[in-house]
Amino acid sequence: MFSLLPLSLSAQAKKQKITITENLVFKPLPYVMVFNDEFDGNSLDTSKWYTYYPYGTNVTKDSCSFCRTHIGANVYKDENAVLSNGVLQLWSKEEKMTWFDRDFTYTSAMINSKQTFTTYGRYEIKCKLPKGAQQWPAFWIFGWNTEIDIFEFICSGPSKLEFSIHKWLSKDCPRRKKDNGSPCYSSQSGKVDFEIDFSADFHSFAMEYDPFMIRYYIDDIMVRYVCRYYDKKGRPITKNTIQKGDYLLEPSFPILGEPVAVIANQMICTSHKEKNPIFPNVMEIDYIRVYQRDFP
Image 1 (cartoon, helix red, strand yellow):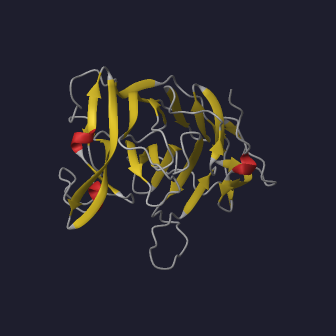
Image 2 (tube, one colour):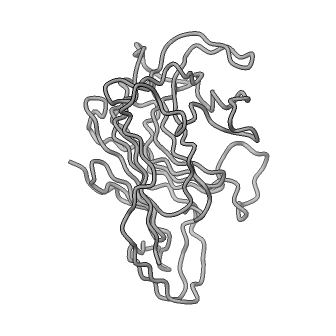
Image 3 (tube, helix red, strand yellow):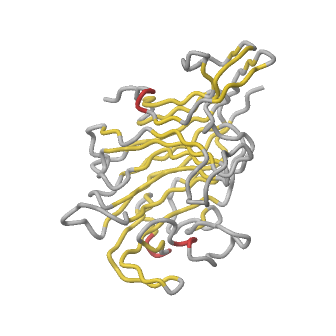
């Protein structure tokens, strides 16, 4: 059903030359589940989730314009996150709402984990996507330097999927002009058409973050990978053992140890070509699970 996405389709930042001075060997231990929500209750467990982006110094309150709007054309509204029959529904609606003196035409919903994660792991969701091209559903992890988008369906309908890795604000960030909201480094797949309507049924999406690789899965089939190290000819190294010597480094690869949160959200696109957008619309989530493991 799926095929491995060729690395040539990945928009990579220029590799950095590095020297590894000693052999690197990693032997992974088994995964251990450290966080999950099966959404089996009567209401969203707010001990696990924010329903907004906890930006700023007072993260327990949605006290900023960006906290409930992000970059979308909607306001994230608590009432749009509904539990029903063991499924979390994130609704998008065409309705007017004012937030921080700004008027919006749409509302939507999102969840952001209160627990953060600082080591290698697997992040997984089982969900059914909204219909239509005006929607922007996503499942991702985020810290101030690290962003890994496990999936984004960006304003092109529920078949065209994009995988991304972004590094923000890192100490080795190249000098930029005025902050324009762009990451320092990125690795993006571009929109990949899997010719599957992911709004027709539930599918699992997962990402595994290891010392040497990031792997993307749909229904437990690996569909893309990004390596941390490449040989001097630019060929990816996929083994857990690396001999000392000269290599190329993927600069967008995450910084180990930075706390990241798990986020699922349903956003409205700021521009679209859909003549008859579908509202109300919904992203349905069966579960979200996080596993971690060490590499002694």
